[in-house]
Amino acid sequence: MSPVRRCSRTACGRPAVATLTYVYADSTAVLGPLATYAEPHCYDLCAEHSERLTAPRGWEVVRLSDPSAPMRPSGDDLEALANAVREAARPHDRGADSRNGGQQTADPLEVARRGHLRVLRSPDS
Image (cartoon, rainbow, N blue to C red; front, side, top):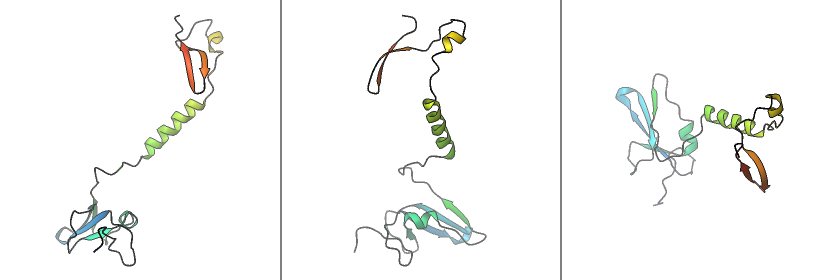
């Protein structure tokens, strides 16, 4: 017997990552992390088949998350990352001091640079 459990779908030989169980009394399909032991009335599914799982009309699919699985970034996370990259890529305007009527800003001044490292001096000194 193979130590790796395989997907229960016909002609699929990929390793199983989730277990599907049906609760017929509640018309519910429960998809959760791979069970510790193979049960006779449960179905082991690979990642692709577990993501594409649908239930019959009138049934509900309950997906239990695996706390040890890595979290996927949400749309908000990706948008925040894109905004941070845009902000970092924006050129720093050094002429701002002259437009502020000679007032000094709280930004530190770059004294030297070596590769990606910078030496900064406080505007107070």
